[in-house]
Image (cartoon, rainbow, N blue to C red; front, side, top):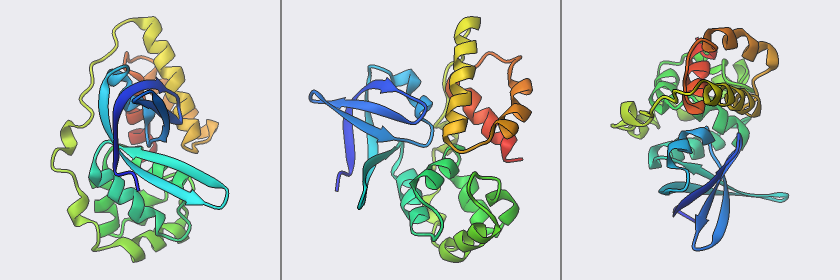
Length: 202
């Protein structure tokens, strides 16, 4: 098992990042790849989970061990696969997810792509009481990124954010509901994604 990879962020796509470690490029699927924009061409540590099935061999990566642990817990829930786990974590607020599970807040959980009432209930049944120690103490500081000031860059960032939301499983109808409120703001791709997710989860 690969616990973590220390390397340079070489490439960022809506689905994954590529980390260059000693000349080898590791494709790593993450909840929101654009959180690493600020670290492009810089060295980072990615906490990884190797997912193996008959027809799949993939690496999933996270900023913290808490995020990784929550992802693994979610994979153990019937009805939740890697894509579903990433979509849940993409909000960037593991503490909010844990709180919803502990408070049996099904209405919050069903807002995630691919999570219906049955799966939400299963998440609560399987995980309630087992996640309290996974809330990061520095969660509020995880996503403190600089705003991108140039308008053309902001436009490209919004387009990238839309693609990232589609990858996470949100429909065009759902995305179109939140886009108008984002167009007047100048943000980075990561910030657009986070803001859109907050609106989608209301």
